Image (tube, rainbow, N blue to C red; front, side, top):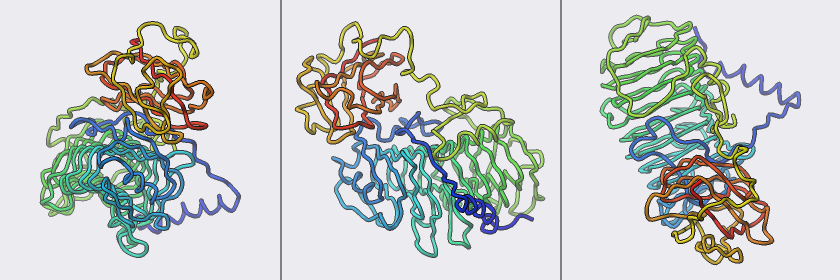
Length: 513
C-alpha cells in the first residue's frame, strides 16, 4: 500500500535539508528567452507564437509582470516577459490599465493575447502563487516553476491550481516547466494543470508534474465537454494520486511521457472523451488508463506503451480499467506531425529534458537529449562570410516598409533601412525589437545588423524571428552578419534580449542568402 502524498514527501524534503546543512548550493543555468517552437495541438488553429515580434521586458516581481501587461498599447500587443527570482504574494499586486485585467492573489492573464512568460537567469519560481489564464489566446509559458498553490489554508491562490485555464481560452503552450504541490486536497491543494469551460488547442511539453493528489483535468464536470485538442508529450508525472489527466469529452494526445507512482489512477478518459496514448512508459503505478469514478465511458487508442510494474483493479460499476492488456477501442486522427521516441528510452530522455532549468533540452526523436535547435543556423560554417564582412547581393530592406517596438531615443524605424550609418534606431532600454516588412512574401536567408559609430559591441544576446509564424530563425550574441536557412516571409524581426547598454542600430540589412 502506497503512503499518502504528504507523507511520501518527507524523504525528499529530508534530502534537501541535508544538502542545505552540508552547504551544497543548487544552481540553475542561464536560460534563453522563449526558445524553440510550439508542438502538438498548440500548432493548430493558427499556431501559438506568444509574444514573438513584440517588446521584451524583465520582471523580478509579480507586480512587475502585471505592469508589463498593463503598459502595452492594447491587450493584444505582443510582449515577452522574462522572469527571474521568486514571485509570491508579497511582491504581487493588482495593476490597472486599458490593456490588462489583473489580480492581487495570482498572475492574471485575463482577456489578453500574444504573451510569452519565460524564466531566465537563475530561474523563475512562482511560490504559492498560481497562473490563471481566462478568455485569452496565444500564450506561451516556458521554463518556470510553480509550486504549492493552495485553495484552502493560507495563503490561497488560483483555486489551488498551479496553472489554470478557463472560459474561451485558445492556443496555449506550456513548456519546460515544473508544477508541484506538497500533498492532496486534504492538505489544501487542487490540480497542477487544469482546463475547463471551452479551452482548446493546448500543449504541455517537457514538463514535470509531481507530489500532488491531482495532476490536472480537461473539463470540470461531465457536462463540461467543450474542451480538448490537448497534447501532452515528454512530461514526467511523478507521485500523483489521480488525474494524469482526467479527460471529460474532447480529444487528447499523450506520447513519450514517463508516469511514475500514479497511486490511484492515471489517464482517466470519460464522458465521451478520446485519448491517443503512444509510446509512454508507465512504472510502479495503478490503473494507469481507463474510465474511473463514473459510468460515463470514454475511449482510447493505444500503441507502443510499456507497463512496468503496473497493477490493475477489477472492472465493475464505476470502474473500467483498460488493462491488464490494454486494447484500443477507438481511433484518433492527429492533424500535426510528430516524432516518437521508443518507449524503452522514455525514462532516460525525459529525465534529461523535462522540467524548468534543464537548458530547454529536447529529444531528437532518437532518444538523445539535445539543445532546442540542433541545427543552429548561427553555428559557424566555412561557406559563410566573416561576421564583419558585409554579404553580397541586394539589400532587400531598402525600399521596404519597416516597423519596431518603440521609437525610443532613436529618430525613427526608417533609420534602419535608409542606407545611412549616421542615423539609428534604439529601443527604450537595453532590450527591444525592430522589424523589416514587405507587402508580399520575400525570401530572406541572411541579415546584417550594423551598429552606429561609437556603440559597436553593445548588442548582446539576440533572436531573429519569422514574424509571420513566430519561428526562431537564429539566436546568438553580437551584431553583424547572421545567416539561416532561407525562408519566405513578409516580416522579419531582430529581437535584442540582452545588451551592455542602449543599442543603436544604424542598419538592419536583409539579403536573399
